[in-house]
Length: 150
Image (tube, rainbow, N blue to C red; front, side):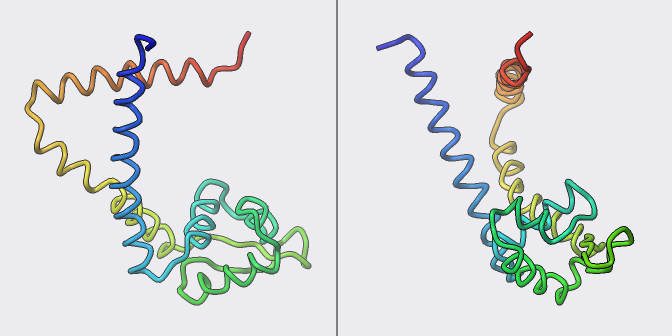
């Protein structure tokens, strides 16, 4: 057995717990707001990209323009996005987040991360220091992996 095996096993266990807890709260929030994962994906796309066309959202989500347009209509009805004529191309529509859409995104992020505060309250100050130090190492090493080779 390689010496990293316990590390990898523990990392997989933590990631599993983290994802399960995060996604459970996130999915409950989406269900409460009557939003599909595609609709939330569209909101996040608009948050990242700013104004976008239907095709840009459809491409990002891997759905047809017709499917994207239909899915976006629900968000228009819920006043989370606006659809207007693109000033550069009158044939195209420009999709923009509304304040309500931004608020829903923020709430969804909080729902996904809220359990971390509960976890933090169970840790002693010394344990928090150990976790912070370990996470800084992982952040640094991950950022090195993401850098393009010279």
